[in-house]
Length: 108
Image (cartoon, rainbow, N blue to C red; front, side, top):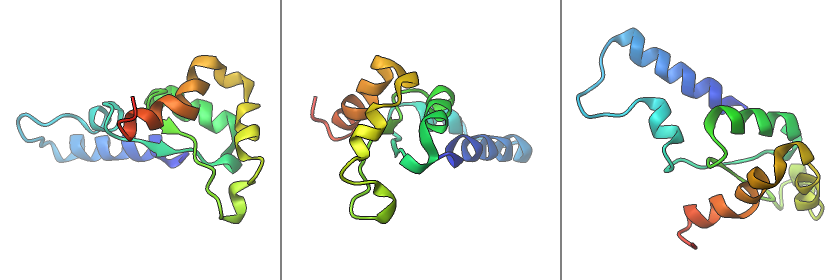
């Protein structure tokens, strides 16, 4: 998921380079940060990458998923590992671990 900010900015650059955006359309960044795009975090990319992507794209975009049964999931410790990432703060952690998924799946 560390590629998300890069990809968002690259698509924006292409739109500006081509010099054309149809009337009434939003920017790429508005589409990706406007509440309809969600992405799961990747534990092996770590706390710093999660914080950086969250800061660039907004803390309403990312959500936790264990990635079980894939080998990189760190299951059954995956949730505990992420919950130990103190630099994310309580509000961002709550969104990452529950609120964003609840909003995505209309569980609110």
